[in-house]
Image (cartoon, rainbow, N blue to C red; front, side, top):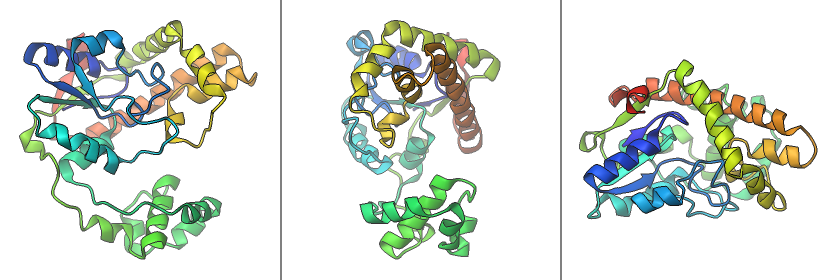
Length: 277
C-alpha cells in the first residue's frame, strides 16, 4: 500500500514496483474512480496503462455517487487474485476502512438528505446525542450532517453503528504499508508544475467537454480545478485566476492529507518522497 499527498510521486513509485516485482496497481483515490475528469484527477495516462495492469480507475460514471463501502466491495476480489495488489492513493479514509474495517450503514434516503441540507449547523448538532457529539468533529459540517442523517434514517446513532464494525478486509500486518513524506517546501513547486502540465495536456478542453452537464453537487465535481475552470469558461474569472485558485486549493488539500497521514498512519513505513525522484 502506498499513501501520500497529491503530487508526491505515489503513482510513479507504484509503477516502479509493478515493473520490478509484478502486480496490479489498484486505485485508492476517491476522485480517480470517476470517468470524465481524467487530467484534473491525474488518472494514469495511456503510457502508464501500457506499463502495468491498473484497476478501479475511471470505472464509475462521473454522474454517479460512490462510497467507501462500494470501493471496498470493488477492491475485495483483487485481494485474493493471483497478481500482487499494489494499492495506491491519497484518500486516507479508503486505507483506514480497508485496514481497520467499515460498518455497512444503509444509504441515506433522498428525503432525509434534503431535510438535513436545510438545517443549520446548530440544528443538526441539537439533534445528536451527547455520546455522538463527543465522537465526531463537531466543527465539521459534513461530519455532523452525516451523523444526523444516519440517526434519523436508521433510528440508530452513528457511534452505535460504528461499534458493529466488522474485521478489516486487509489487516495492516499483512501488508507493506508506505506513506510518502513530502515536505511543504518541496511539494509546493511540484503542485504548481503539475497543474501547468495538466493545462498543457488539455485540462481546459476537458472542462469544456464537461461543461454542458456540469453539476457542482456531484462527488466527481470535487476534482480540484474543475469548478475554477468551469467558472473561467462561464466568464466568471480569468484563466490565470482559475489556475492560481486551483493551485492554492491543491496546496490546502495536500496540507490536510499530510495531517491525516501524520496522525492516523503512525504504524506505516515513512519514506521521503524526495529520495524517490
